[in-house]
Amino acid sequence: MQCAAAFSVVVTVVCLVALTSGKMHCLLDAKHCGDIGEGGAAQALLPPAGARPGALAHRTLSSNPTVREKCAAQGPVIPRVAFLFMTRGTVVHEPMWKEWFRSAVGLIPIDVIRNHNCSESVFSDIASACIPDQNPQNILGSQHLFSVYIHIPPGQPGHPKGSLFHGLEIPVHIKASWGGFELVDIAKALFGAALQDPANQKMVLLSESCLPLYPPTLTYAQLISEPKSRINACSNEGARWQAMPWRWHPKMARAKDAQITPALWRKTSQWIALERELAAAVAGDTAVANMFRQSCLEVDWDDELERHYECYSDEHYMPVLLAFKGLENKTDCVGSLTNVDWSENKPHPWSYTPEEVNVATIRRLRAREGCYPAAALRLAKHVFMEAGAPQSDSYCRAGAPWAPVLLGPHCSLIARKFPENTASQVHALYSNCSADLGMLGCPGDDLVFGQQL
Image (tube, rainbow, N blue to C red; front, side):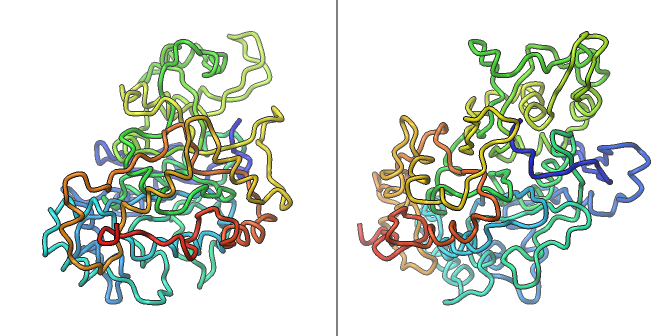
């Protein structure tokens, strides 16, 4: 079972909004619903009617707004990738993530300029609202490409003041057990939080032990350019065994509100990237979720099946839901966002040791047939400009190289598991310019802007 090791789950209290209807629905027993009222945290999961990207930032612009808030309110619409961390308490690779996000500060996708026909006004708006401070203290608030949302279990203090991730914890706290449906509840809560901001167009589930395999430029360009979500909700008729059909239970087809037949049974990695429509479908669902909560279990003996029965919702719920809703054609049928080592055939994937954190490991994790990281790293640089770059029509020339061929959907962008005891080695490796991994904007690895091509 993939990656549920990070949690110990039984649910406290969670009510989520069904985004498709705008009504409150309880994820658990009705007795838990009193803790979040119509005007409380659950209702806040809904964006305002008709909101455009950036509208929330404009509505909530504080007296001391971040550069990103100012840009979202006064500048052009910049789609973002939301990173949704499921943690046991903190994101363990904060030093690395801090430098990773720092290398995205001030970058503007050139598609934003092209969407405004390279007009003088779009350059003016960016210059007036989107240029970061020279040495920004708030790194996440000074970049425009990514949002971050973090779930921590009940009783955990979260990230301290001064941390890169301080204040980014969502207000829903769920205690989870390995393989329990509560892992899905956590993901649904994270999707619901990210959906509050219409600028978040791709939403990526990560664990605390995940590492990016590529710099922000390629990671962002790859995810935003992909028309489909990185999740396998396809039927794969030729390889039905991959969906583990023995985990389907006949009572799933007898559920009152969501009848799941064997033809709808799917399996995917827990670590996925969803575009906005599919994330809303997951966050807003209750019928299929209730069926899974009641039927996808592990029992020593099932009387109907006359055998031991086990089912793990975090591997099946989302792809089954998307197939049930007829959305499987909006998924990439691969779901290989994350490179995980299952070679030992154990319930948990391999955890890398500090000694294994080296250039060879990262290059191996990037390597896959049909994936060409060197070319993608080089070309991804050309799809960004720096906020404040002078106006230029070159960005809008016919044939301008602002849409390079990147990686395919089968090429992993993330790797795990790199536990807490590898944090110092990871930071040292990713910050080492002589490693030639192209990760953090080393000298000689600068962006090439349009006027220099």
